[in-house]
Amino acid sequence: MRRLGFLALFCFMALGSLISGMGTDEFKFSLKPDSIRFAAIGDMGTGDAAQYTVPRKMVEVRKTYPFDLVAMLGDNIYGGSKPEDFEKKIAFPYKPYWMPE
Image (cartoon, rainbow, N blue to C red; front, top):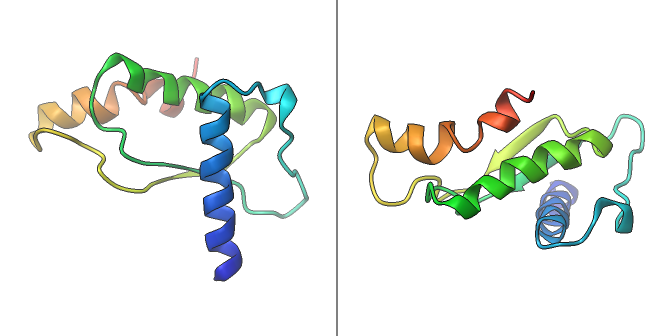
């Protein structure tokens, strides 16, 4: 269990580094066979323009680091909990990840 917690923290930090400007050619993820690969994101439910960067980077990173799942850590929707809020702040911004072109 401790290993899984460390892996989650590592993935979160690595994805954050990539999003903040570090290119994928500067950081190499481990691609050991039979390893568990996932991304972790959180505090993303604003619906503003900056939020759209995260799923675009996730699609880009997944090409070289094929993770199988994404853990959404919390604070997924800010400022409302109506169905329209979910559409605006989760479904629409993350559509490129769920339904890549």
